[in-house]
Structures are given as structure tokens and as C-alpha cells.
Image (cartoon, rainbow, N blue to C red; front, top):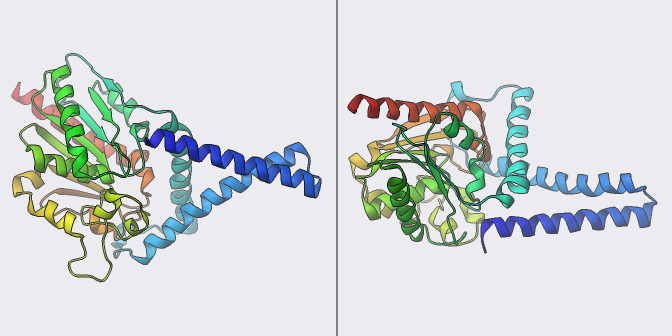
Length: 317
């Protein structure tokens, strides 16, 4: 089952639950239609809100120490961070991703290396709905790929990435591509480089990727979730697959990576799991996990990385 079909099924279940609650309110309490509608929809939204809040709670249990400059101070700032994460999760899972499919957009004559976008666990190409308009505005050719099966082996996604890379290179005539990847997608990019080499890589930019695993992966389903697991008290804490991935990389491969992460990530815990030795690590504060693909500060940082690569290409030409 694809992520799009799964999300559509979840939406159907939520709609049926809202309908059942609304009908019960009419039958038992004599509520009006509008009251029943508000109660049904409100109940579903409340459950989603509590799930989101629970993610923050669980990640806090395994959180890494937050440097002073990245701490979220004040109730207002915390509420803004929570609302951004909650609203982004609702928008992506209830509207964007259930309707999305992989796409390619070529901008002829662009000097910028083309960008391949890799989503994270349980998502699809729709995750990039806020970055795609920026890429189009900058005239950067790009493509997305849906990583399926959704609970498959991370190494098994590498051939999908290989085909997408070659297709993008053929369409643009570029020698190298940039990979921008969220969460699990960053591990997929590294697994692809281990399998197929780094000669065609201009840069890999990861957003909130669990390079050393996340304790919350213990609650996930599928082989890919198991490959992202991290144990809080074990030494080493990373699972065997993550250790093997790291051992298969050299310093040159690590130097190609820019790892962007948030010290308040509510899925990757400890949050410093996203720090990758030998890579360029860019830390942020006050941004949730899903919101990394929407937050203007984070997207500005991604575009700056891409702009620097374009300038390098233009200088060579």
C-alpha cells in the first residue's frame, strides 16, 4: 500500500468517526446538525492534537541538552512552535500528501545543479509542497520520488534513488545532483551513496535525519523503523544497521553532507542524533520535525546552500 492510499484510508476512518460522534450527539443529547458537526470534527482534531502533543512529551524524555541560544523561552514562543508543528502535520497528512504523486520539473538552461527530493517515514512527495515553489522561483530543476513500500528496507530504496538520479541527470544534462532529504530520507541518501558512490553528488542536505537513530523509532512499524532505532541506555546506542552505514562512509562522503536539525525536534530524540561528524551541521531552535519542511528559516537555509552550489557551478563555467 502506498503512503497516499494509506493516508486516504486514515482520512476515511477519521470522517466515519466524526460522523458517528455527530450522530450520537443528535440521538443522545438532541444536538442540532451544526452542533453535531462541530462536535464530530472537533473530536477528531482534538485527538490529532493530543497525538502531536504526546510526540513532544515522548521526545522530551529522551532529549539531548539544549544549548542556551536554541532554547524556546516563554509560553507564547512554545505555543507558536507547537501550532506550527500541529498545523503543518494536519495540512500535510490531511490535504497535501493524500493527493500527491511524484513529479519532475525541468528548467532549461539553469546553471544550478538539479535537486532530488526524498521524503521521510510514512510520507510521500507531497511533503515538499512548501519547498517546490521556491525551487521553481529560483529556476532550479527538481524531481521527487515516492519511497515504497512504506515499511520497506532502507537499503531497498537505493535502486529507486539511483533510477531517479539518472533520470534527472538525463533530463538536465547535469553531471551531479543535489539531494534534499527529510528524516529517514537522509538515511536513504546515505545508503544510496554507499551502494552507488558519490561521484554524481554535488551535495546532500538532510532535514531532521536520525543519523544516529531515534528512541521514538521503537514505536514505529516496519523494517525501516527498526533500522532507525536507538536505545537510550545501550552502548553504542545506535542499532547495527546504523553502525554499518557509518562504517561504510569515508571522510569525503561525510563532507558532502549538510545536516540541518532542530533542538526541539519532536520525533528525533535525542535531537543531537542529527549531528553527523564530518558533515556541515546547522542547528535551529523552535522548530518541530514535520515543520522543518515548512519553516521559513529552515527553507531559507536550504536555498542558501543551493545558491552557493549554483555560484560554484557558474564560476567553473
